[in-house]
Every structure is written in C-alpha cells, then in structure tokens.
Image (cartoon, rainbow, N blue to C red; front, side, top):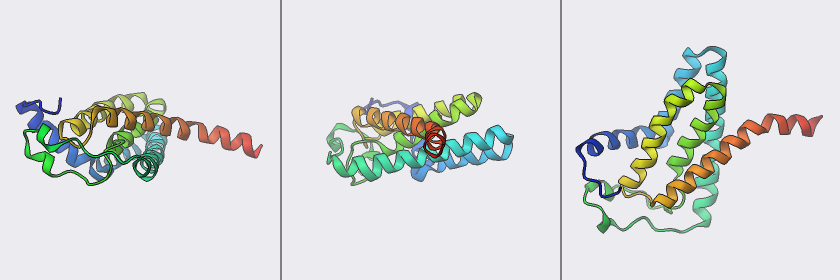
Length: 165
C-alpha cells in the first residue's frame, strides 16, 4: 500500500492528511454536527470530541512514550511525502486513534453522522501507511486505542452514576 503509485491516491490522500493534522477534520465535523444536528448532533459531537481527547492521551501521551519504534525506512517509498514525517515513535498511529475514536463515539449517538465519518476515518488510516509515517500494525494499534477510548467515553456516565449512587 505504501508504494502504491496511483494518481487517485496522490490526489486524494495528501489533502486528507492536511485535514487530519491537529484533529482539524474532526473538530470541523463536530462543529457541523452541533450546529445543524439539534440535540442529537450536539450529543454526538460531544461524545466524539471526548473520545478523541482520550484517544490522543492514550496514543500520544502514553503508548508513544512506552514504545520507541522508528518510522518505516524512507527507502521503501517513492514519493516526497516521506521527507515530511514526525520524529516521534511510529507506534501507534495517533491520527488513526483520534479518527476511530471520534467516529466510534459518534455512531451510537447519530448513526448517519457516524457512517459519514467512517469514510474519512478509513482514508486517514490508509494515508498514514501510504505516506510512510506508519507501519500497518501502527495503524491497527491506533484503531484499537480509538475503539477503546470510544467505549470508555460511552461507559463513563454509567460508571460515574454507579460510583456515586
């Protein structure tokens, strides 16, 4: 996948990467949901942002500090994008963790919005490998962290009520 030389991939994936930088894509989606989705949109947006924050802490704040994995070798890639990679540990993919967390938290609250978010989420995961920033296992670990973060955010109110009650 990383060496896939496709005009389609070269045209679509770099803008996806730019939009996903600093979680801009997910903040924009949350803003649209909250502004146009009524109570359901606001709830979905809040769940998505909370899960994204948890995923970022778990992936970038914890896992990347525990696992020192170098990025894939630059020689494996034909394109220039490989020169513009972070210096942090490759494992796990924080972009994928944030994307999956946001989408997995939004989906139960507003399934239509979750389905719409699934497409850019998948593209972010593909882009992280295609750009040379991550191994596929980094992306898989990021997705697992994202799912765990969404599950934790979804369960937190029940756990809190049980603890307080």
